[in-house]
Image (cartoon, rainbow, N blue to C red; front, side):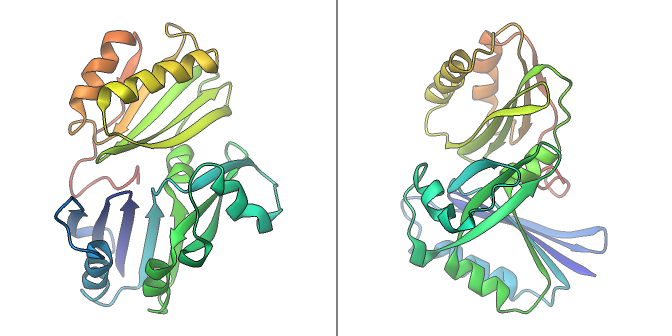
Amino acid sequence: MNILNLLFTKDGLIFQIYKNKDFLEERSYFVDEETPYNFIGEKLDEVLAKQSFDEIYVISALNHFTLMPEGFSDHGIGYDLISYNAHVEKEKEELMLSINEKFKVQFYYTFPKDFYKKIKQLGIPTYFNFSGEKFLNSINNKNNKEIHINLYHNQCEFFAIDNKKVILYNNLDINSEVDFLYFIMFTLNKIHFGIHETTFFAYGETTENETFISELQKFVKNLKIVFDNVPNKNFILS
C-alpha cells in the first residue's frame, strides 16, 4: 500500500511517501521573498503526480482555526468563529472539523479550497486533520500544569493544560524568538500558571529552533525535550 503524508504549514509543504511501513521519500518546500506565486500549489501538483497512492493523509498547521468544547454543533457559524482569530475568505477556504475525544474539545479550521480540490479530485481515500488535534492526541497530561510546545519552521503551536483540561491553545508565527518567548511568559501570567509549578515540553523542530530553546531554559526550571523531528522518521508526532 502506497501512502502519502502531507503537512501544510504557514509557509511550506512537507511530504512523506511510504510503501506499507517502509519509508521511501521525504521533502520540504518553503516560500520566501523570491518564491514565485503559487509555488506551493505547483509543488503539490508534482507530489500528487509522483505515483499512484492508495491513501493520503493531510495535516493542516495553518493558523486559521478556533477551539470549541466537544459537542458544539452549530457548524454554520464555523467561519465566523474562526474570523475572530484570523481573516477568513469563505470563497477560498474549506471549513473543516476535527474532534479530540481524549480532551473533549474540537477544532474548526479552514483549508485552502484549491489545495482541497486538487487532492479530492484524485478519488483516493483521503483523511484530513488539524495539527492541533493530532498534537493534542499525543499528549499525556499527569494532572499538573503543563505547557506543550510543538515547533515548526518559523512557526509553533502550544497547549496549556491543567488537570487534564485544555486551558489554552494557540498557533503562531515565530518571526522573533525573543517576542515569542515574551508571549509565552505573558500567557503564563494571564492563565495563572506559576513558572516554577509548570512543566514545559518541547517537540518538533527543536534543533532548528535551538536558540529559542536555550532562551526558554534561562527562565524555565522544568523543560523536557520530548523529541526532535528526525528526517525520514517522525511526521507530526506520528
